[in-house]
Image (cartoon, rainbow, N blue to C red; front, side, top):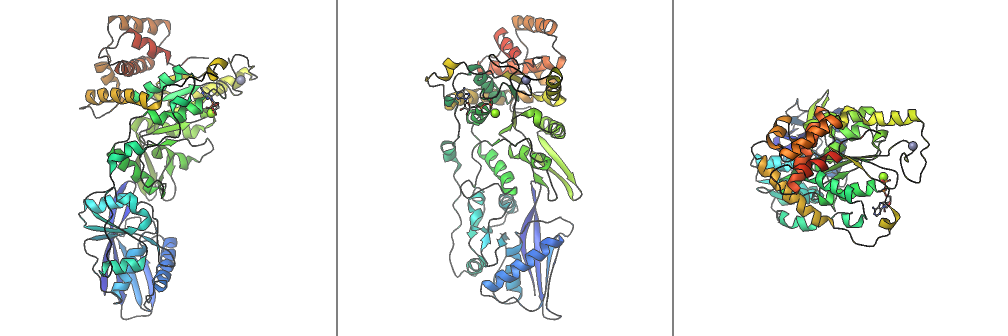
Length: 506
Ligand SMILES: Nc1ncnc2c1ncn2[C@@H]1O[C@H](COP(=O)(O)OP(=O)(O)O)[C@@H](O)[C@H]1O
Ligand SMILES: [Mg+2]
Ligand SMILES: [Zn+2]
């Protein structure tokens, strides 16, 4: 008898249907064959399915069993075919009488028959909903992530026995209630708040501008000046995630297995701070079974690269394309996958290898050659994508001990959100959301300064030797500063402030 169940597989972020066909023949010698999975995964799946069936009180039929995962040419990975295979075997061997119509089934089996948390359930649930399946069966632990999808009944199950009893209508299980997003904005918690950062008004101001226009930032300052603290506080002033953004991000985290029982849905903007010793694949993405890297886990949030010059040149080079295209494309023998990478880059570095160049009260012990080597690494084309160059000096003692409470992140965020609305309106037919994404043509269209502003700009070009690239960068940033000021026109003071954030030579 031939039984067909439906499951799916994630190819990048594009999930596809997989048909699980199980045949239990009444002739031939007992055997168990799976076709359509990589070699090693087949053996593991066979062991799990056979043992789980026995330990759930059923018989593993001593017959010729053939399982085909179709389409054959699709690379399939992941242990989540266990449950459809096991159910197929039980039905095809006549032990149970169930219908698998109109149903997607996903789940890895433990040897005792219980269902284990499986990667990539959310994108597959969305696929099932799009394909108009009425129901999906998934492991209990994946329940919360799947329950954000509306338009499909999600059943989260403990084990194989429960799946059989449920499908046989012997027990009643209710579909999970749809997750309500409206309460998330209040539930989103951030570990750090700008209220905890004393002084550093200029740095905070620059980060507010960055959050508003989604401009990348390089912070330069001696050790202990608060660069890491500022970066960690940054996500708390970004606009809250929308429901669509949250679902999009949760899909990426679902595929990489970064969801946990405590945090089954991504409701805050990500803050990813990979160490400079992290592997290339871990940062950019890739691997044998292609996976998104840190730059995609930072999507819609912040990628913080602390000690930027310590990162291998290959990584800095590889970041250029994702910074430009807002996505990363990874090619391997078994296919090409693309993942989104729309993050704000915050990078930090010391002014020199020892950290104390030009720091009052400290002596820099670096040789001139060392310093130029260090700064050269920072002058790469990669930094063309950085709009804000920020000096973060050590805080004077009186500021550090000042007990006055600084403005909190919530207040700053209100201004950011307001200025983001202006941008959304401005770019509604342009396919972008923020000022930092403007092409030179859009900069020409939307960033015309008034007469005095133009005078200042002309002076800056001749006196400061601004390159064409810096010229556009200054205008783009001035647009964001004017938006924060709720000013349609870019005027002198907006440009004057913008000019402060241009890269300075040492
Ligand atoms: N402006 C500040 N307000 C309050 N604490 C600060 C400030 N700057 C630095 N600190 C404290 O100093 C420590 C070192 O700061 P950190 O952000 O790690 O510096 P950096 O990354 O520049 O080396 C932090 O633990 C933080 O508590
Ligand atoms: Mg630091
Ligand atoms: Zn030094």
